[in-house]
Length: 130
Image (cartoon, rainbow, N blue to C red):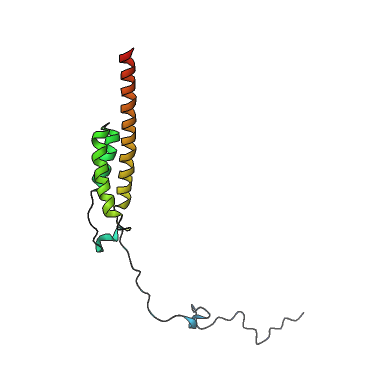
């Protein structure tokens, strides 16, 4: 049982260059570039024509909430149509979605209001003839 340690076994030997990763000579030289930050809502650099899409949406939702029916829905439809006319020509216009929602909301409200007027008129005629 002889425990001979060979001279070429350097396993437990501490190297002089501590903290250097093997293969570190293969690094890319140069500085790190700053990341380019794109601000939220970065449409300020491009000028879009103004629309009244928000006003059309407020009128359309107000006709539902306040029971305005045709009184608020028809102006909402007209304003939404003018906003859609502007935004349809520019696919990246920020008001395009709002104009479409106002258009659909006002049409749905006009249909519901017209249906209610027809039902109320029919009920009134039915009770008056009886």
